[in-house]
Length: 241
Image (cartoon, rainbow, N blue to C red; front, top):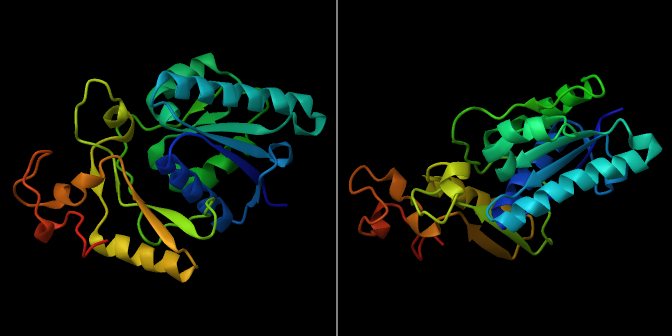
């Protein structure tokens, strides 16, 4: 029988798109998806760590998932994977402090989630957590043909146009978790928009950490957060939207 996987998605819309990508790859790999965590062979918690309350919520969700599998006799062998921003930033510390978790994965591993699920299912029960997060800032960016299993109502969808941020704001940890700003191409965004409209979506919500910087990282000259905006060189314009 194929593995049955459940997922808890926390945080912002950008994290929700990451969850949709993971679910899309799991489904493409032939795995079953379930909204009932008690039925899952593997449960993934996609975490947020933007502010302290988000980290607290993520830790509580992980501990509750562990508690719940102990309450269900038939789910004592359920595996637990932690993904998302908190995992990306703090996996090395958490792997020593949260023995309840089977594996920690980072933001560059969204498309590798199915092999990771198979890996944790093959682990011996009670084995120490595996920190699978690469030792570098994320570089992943989805493309128009990236599998997604959408979690929004059918009439609207989020369209992630870029990832990361280049602003070194002292109050914000996003660059340390999500990496440098990297834009998708205009063609990639257009093709995904067309696909979503073809699926019946009526409203597209363009999202990223720094939407106003879209395309500017692809300029061959005049790059930088304060470079003069020019719609002729690839940033968002009325024509692009």
